[in-house]
Amino acid sequence: MSAPPLTEESLALPPARDAGLLIVALAGVSASGPLMAATVAPALAIAFWRNALGAGLTGALTVIRNRAELASLDRRGWLTAGFAGLLLALHFGTWVPAVKYTSVASATALVATQSVFSGILAALGGRRLPRAAWLGMATAIAGTALIAGADFGVSGRSLLGDLLALLGGFFAAGYVTTGSSARRTMSAATYTTICYTVCSLGLLAACLVGGQSLAGYSMRAWVLIALVTLCAQLFGHTLFNVVLRSMSATLVSLAILIETPGAALIAYLWLHQSPRISALPGLILLFAGLVVVVRASSRSIEAAPPDLD
Image (cartoon, rainbow, N blue to C red; front, side, top):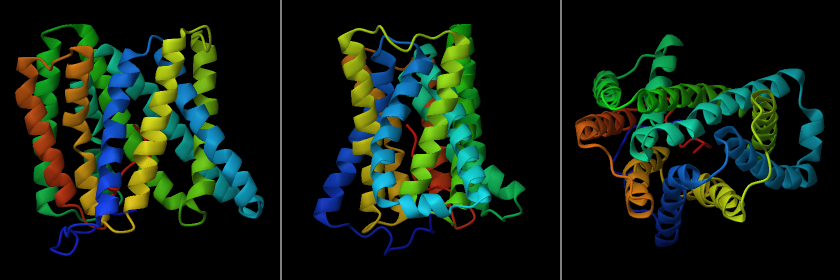
């Protein structure tokens, strides 16, 4: 899904019902980071369970409704969707640990650099980007450097979290780019089922190799894992796809950036976790740069809401 340039029509007010659904979706994805940070369980295990639960929900419906499509997929379709699933596993395998190492505000802002990496991948693919997009990317990169510099002065653990969040943004961009190719030959339900299943298997393998426990958590931890799945998957990105019936992809992409301050606010109110003063200039600069990138996006930039956080 690509984001068209902003026009007066694309920013027109959507129907009240979809506007309400958009608010619910934003609340859902904003809660994702704080929920994972508060869950007392191994980071990779959290990533595995939220994807496995999501794969189970979507997979059951797909097998019932799209059995013929699954059977008719060619080798290229399976490989493309499977590769997207591996990239998604790498995204979650870096993004979820990031919220454990650094602040939710920094991790959420840095993983949003997906838009920047998507623009760079588009340019490497031979697409011409508008000058404003390059300006926005340069601004976002400057903000990223300021955040990393502020965290470097605090602890190596925080800096590691920043780097993991950046890697999460990079792998997310690869996932979206690969997914856009896979979606040309299959429905969203079929693609999501294959992708989430491969992602879950990849994360399961990582948990087994890394010796991370997949059970034995407290009831509170299981409840939080279930809430992460519901908030991010069901109430989050599923609803983003629903509201696209009345809103432009550009408007939804701009709205999804609210996840960054939204997650920071929830983390502050619930976890009493406030962004470091030294990191605020970088966070503001990064957020401003991302807004410019998305606003300047054209059909050459993949800036659609990702099926991620």
